Structures are given as structure tokens and as C-alpha cells.
Image 1 (spheres, rainbow, N blue to C red):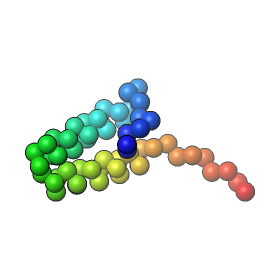
Image 2: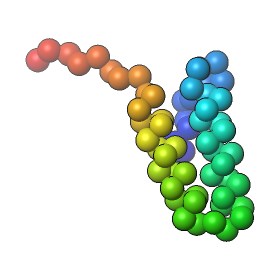
Image 3: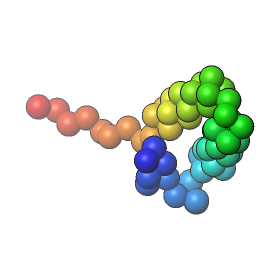
Image 4: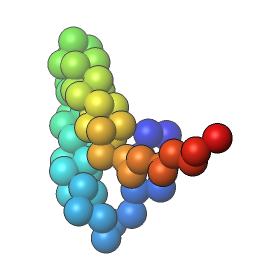
Length: 58
């Protein structure tokens, strides 16, 4: 699941939860194009907001 590891105390939690709700609403209505668009936006949001691991020098 895309949201694994996103905790309620994180600043991004409310925005991600709202996006999940919008995806669910589109899915329930059978609006596949909107669902797929929102799903892509949600994936991008999660990827962009994930903490980046510090790179170690070789």
C-alpha cells in the first residue's frame, strides 16, 4: 500500500488522507479516468514528500 509508514503526526498526513478520500470517491462513483489521475497525483505526492536517505560516500 502506498501509505504504509505515513503516520498521523506527520505534516503530510492530512493532505495524503484527503487525497485518498478523493480517490475512493472517484472509484465508488465508477469514474475511472478521475480515479487514475488522482492515484497518479497521490503517488507523486507521496514520492515527493518521502524523506530522502542521506547518500554515503563510497
